[in-house]
Image (tube, rainbow, N blue to C red):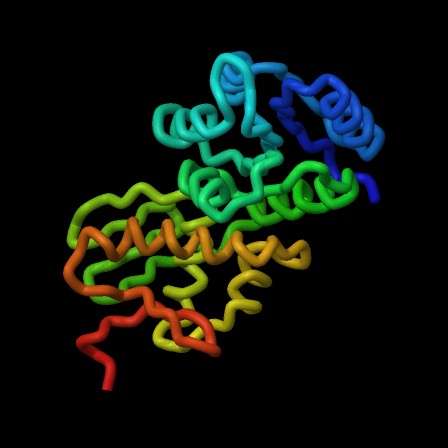
Length: 234
């Protein structure tokens, strides 16, 4: 069905056939679409304008999608939802893409209806963010009003999806949250492929646990995940 109000989408894709197909389809579905055929132009548009979502190809002339996403997150400090399009489907490629700040990952060739559904899901999640709260476990704190994450007084750099996963686990602590429930709460009805959550959790551990002595994020085999202060476990 058409979007409730017009959503602005930026498509950064160097394949003319794919770009024309995606643009025509989304515009027919009620979106407004800006288009760039290379990474440098795409980054300029992403920083200069306000978009509800960005569809970003990985292999681009001038500047690849990884560099575009990294600069968008770290230099421009934009939290616009990003879905990456790529022919690469290895776990390492997905980890790299998600680690640089992508929220979702779609493998080429893709179904245009699935792309639309994932874009809608990203926009809904971004506009209807989790209720504003502050959560603290041990020396880790999350302020969802300011989107600030700190551990031992140090500000941590989080991707938007990493922050959502962390907030789900912090809110539920010390309860174990199943894989399926994490995916439902973070991605809604349009679930990612089997590697996406694992990739985000890998990156999340690197940020919140690896630099610190106490490990808070735990995988409970066969059950799910939890964040808990191990000193307080009985």
